[in-house]
Image 1: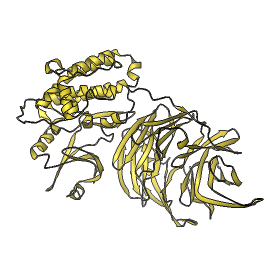
Image 2 (image 1 turned 135 degrees about the vertical axis):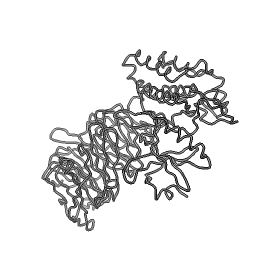
Image 3 (image 1 turned 30 degrees about the vertical axis):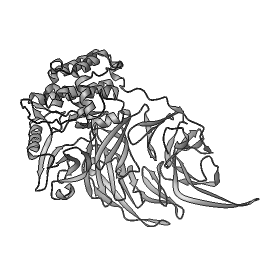
Image 4 (image 1 turned 120 degrees about the vertical axis):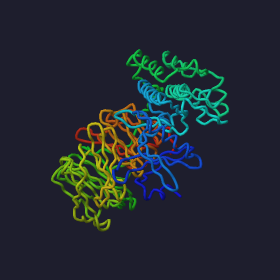
Length: 608
């Protein structure tokens, strides 16, 4: 029976699978009454006996430490059992290693120090973890960085126990020599910490190969200590990775003291430097097609309307295909018939005047939605420009992808008076009508409404930024609250992507960080760039981060920077035109240029 069926009467509702191992699966879940987010560890009874289950529960309940994932409850039914654990939305340390996130030396040593503090607590209780590896080190997001937490005590041992098993369990790449003979001690965990430190500093483990080859290497070979690593750290690695127990650190506290000494001795500039080699130099932008407009363009966008224009020439009829290009400056909008990159505009532009300055264009299946701080307007071929909502106070607003519902929230209202404003747009694509406005009280949450966005065609999310955290409140299009999520860092922007429930975000006070946030299940990845992005755009080949001085970085789904372009024109605004093309507005005094940036022609190391 599937766990989702077994948990229908449970206290928890599943949000999605977030991990799995040899003994079971781990799900992101939410408590039905309190709304608290937890990790639900569903253990396979055939692979994880009742004895082992009770052992892990006993170990977890006896350990309390900021760097150990705590056990909060136990779910048990006739067909299964689950541990309810603290949830860590940042994934595992393995993710940071595989994504090649540029960590500073200070951060690496901070991670190792936190691991050693947690192990010191466990070892003092007589508990040896026996499976320390990046996959068992969870990450919680904190402002600008991560907090590490040890998890999975499934094969932990008491230091006083003598096992009579004939085999061994664990992860060969991180196992101390004695572990291959089914022996364990506190020093075995410290050996694994040494392997992790080596991997964080160099990007690779000291030994690789099959399990048999790894056993031979751990028993007989000495790792090559990298010359790029400070000598004091090489001494720590050399001692932590000793083959003989007697030559290793005796306790986690002893190894922690050695790490702290290195941190105090190294210069601050060296601690702040990245442990990863620098990226290849960025490419320079090739010549880009553009059109010149006799107006300033502070905002650029397009309408999802295909146009066919026929005109009589000396050679006969000329047919041109195009779309509507929109540019805005203050409260004026200019609409052009545009036939493609670098092509002149066809016919005379149409000028429109809005009551307030334009902030954003959003293409919808029948035209374009125009947002100001106080209103929402719809531009369509049949009706032209139609006001579908006006407000007395500044709002954040969003439209569902099908263009049928919008939501708005007044950003200056006190938290106790905050309301969600909802309206359905009815009628055909040729004639849009507005249904009555619905006002729904929102749960009280201190802070500033930072963003409002559609999750899908039925749900909206409001992001409320506090001093050092962000709250996400989710609602249906009818105004029913369906859940609240919390992130322990303050965001400054939230941008939807083509993938449902996924957003890009920027952090306050950490201008070079980009977050990828999945709300279902709740997962957060942090990428670091060597620019300060102002615009984040989800493209067909990754996430484009663009700075105000014309630098572009393209990050793929694995978190790797796959393209760096410098010396692009300094944009006033950037918008997505298609999966691989960006509209790039540049102000030139009283004039403006609209460039078309085609990712396929920039020389990026990407397969399109």
